[in-house]
Every structure is written in structure tokens, then in C-alpha cells.
Image (tube, rainbow, N blue to C red; front, side, top):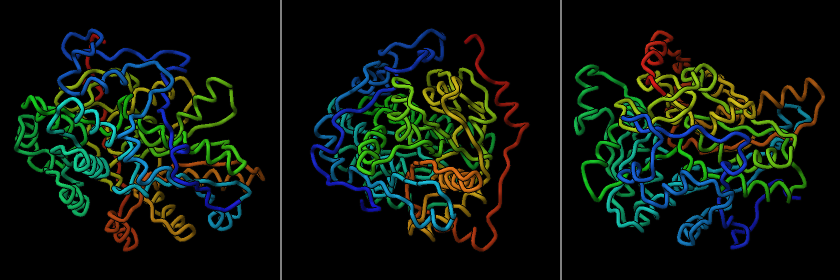
Length: 453
């Protein structure tokens, strides 16, 4: 069997349906609440933001949801993505563990994000939408939606967290190359942005602020909808093509994971790989562990509170039950911009609360060190976000060496770091530093959690 567990991009190998973990949850999710009335939200309440098909997926409990053929036709350009056995890394670590990684950096945008961007753009076009607004942190989501907009003839407006807008000019250039408009957030184009700038002229921004701006901009025009790149149920649903493919590929390899690892910011790439396997654990009691890895400077799962909170800073979005650091929390400007969100996907939060997912947090220096160790063994330079998963995989492989255990480890290498070389340059020069979140700021943000929920 080849060390590269990759198969032909054929009609039969690309999944025909997404997997919906809501069908197998032992305890249902808490309802989403209206931000004004605090009553459970209705599909009509979401209609100003999302197309009808997306709303139906958000609330569905069907185990399988068919992937439309126009979406599959685009995904075939790079899917199935390859699954690799990391033998050179295993040798470097001198571990008996078997390490596999699902590589999502083969997409045109360089990450897993197009898996949902293509689907959301298709559903918006089918409903007659002309423009989509969104936010982006490190830029993977913004560039993916820009790509999807180009494929389906949609105008795309992206609010990019200001610190990432400054740190990652080539991500911005990629969005603009695909035809999108990219603005730094907070901006002076929305009421939410102007309010933040008035209070904090030097604000580095946050995903919560950028979401507020994108939602506000969408509400200003009847031909415009909003798209989110993580957190919500339908986004995690679209990402399950990753895990569904990985199940087939592990079968071809004659192996099965004991441990699945993914980095977590909003939760989409972790869920995309983990949920199909977690569904098997829930239905069949398969013995498999799941580790969700986050930055210690934005420790949503490890230090946050499980509570109802807004998804944005200006409190325009519905209330969801999730692990949160408070919607007003602005994390420090560490380089893994895709992991700088105050909350966690309700499905990931729910399953963590129930004990099925183990959260873990690392500092950015140890993650960059792990990323370089991986690159020098396997040849792929990971995105700063993916470095968190690499760090956990290496740590678990080292534990196997110490214990003499031969576990099978599978992690999601969610994107490449080709647009993040300045961060690697800074690390190699010794100028990159570990950043710590302000505990007082988190306490203040949590004190502002909505009451009456």
C-alpha cells in the first residue's frame, strides 16, 4: 500500500451526501434564541440573513443531506483531498504511533474553507441573491468565498479583521484577484465599525466586530445575504466531506484511528474531520478519542463559559448556547487569525460539554516549532492554525513512544502556510512572541453575557 492514501477523483469516491451529527446526538442541542425576545428563533427570523435551503440545513435532524450536483461538480476540482501516512515524521519522532493527516491545502484557496463556501454561494445564487457579505480572520474564509463568488457570479464583500489585514497582505490580494472587495475591520462603512473606532481608534479588530459589520451591510440591501465560514450547524455539515472521505481512505489503508485531532477556532475543520467518526462512536460505541486544539491566547473551550451568547460584538445575531469568552472579547493579535473567535460552534461546544471531545490549548511558539518539525519531515508548511493540530499530534506520538503504544493518530492539516511566511520569518528571527489574553478583559466580557436565557 502506498504511503499516499489517495484515490481517483471519481463520481463514486466523492461523497453524495453530507453527514448531519444532529441525527445522532444523545441530547439535543439547546434552541437558538431571538436576540430581542429570547424566544426560540424561527426560520422566518433567519430569512433576512440566509437563503432558505441553508436555513433548512441549519435546523435539520436528517442524518444525510444530499450534496447538489452543481456543488459536487466544483468540489471535484480538488476532492477527494489526499490522506497521507506521515512515515518520515514517525521516524523523526522514533514513535510506534501511526500518524495520518488529511491535507486540505490542495483546494484553490489553500484550505478547507471552500467546502462550505461553494455550497453557500450556490444556494444564494439559486435564490436570486446578487451579493454576499462576510467576515474573515486570517483570510482563508474570505478568499474561499471570493473564489465561490467568482464561480457562481456573485459580488462578495469581505470585512477582514484589521490585524490580519495588516499582517497578511497576500490573502487580501487573493480575495481581490478573485473579484471580491476586502475592507479592514473595524471600518468606517458601518455603524458598528464607526462605534468601535470612536471608542478605540487603534482597535486591532476581532471576528465578532467583523461579523457585526458584515451582518449590518447585508441588512442594508434587499439583494444581499450574509455568509458565515464556521460555527453554525450548516457550515459544519458542509465540512463533513473531509471525514467521509477519510473513512473510505482509512479503509483502503487497512487502519482505523484511535485518536482524531483538529485545531478549533469556530470549529468547522475539526468537525469536518471528526463528526463522521464521532457519529460512529455515538451509534456503534466505537472506541475513539477526539482532541480539539485551540490557542492559549484565545482559550474558548478550555477557559470559556458554556452559556448563551451573541455571535457578534454589536449583538445583531441570534443567541446560541456555546463555550464563549464573551462577545466583547478582543483577543491579542497572534498569527493564527482563524482561531481568534470568542465563541465555539454550538455542536462542538455541546459535545465537549457531554464529554465526547477533549479540549487542549497551546502557545503559538510551540505550535510554530511543531509546524517546522512537520515541514522538515513531510515537506508541507502548515498554516499557523493547522500548527495547533500538528503540535497535538506530535505530543500524542511522543506519549506513545514513552508508553510503548502503537496508536493510530489522524489529524486535519486544514491548510498550507504559503501566505503566512512572514510569521515563519518572524519565528525564525526570534521576534515572534507568545501572547497572553487579558483575564480582566475576559471577566468583563463574560459579565456582559445576556440575561434571561
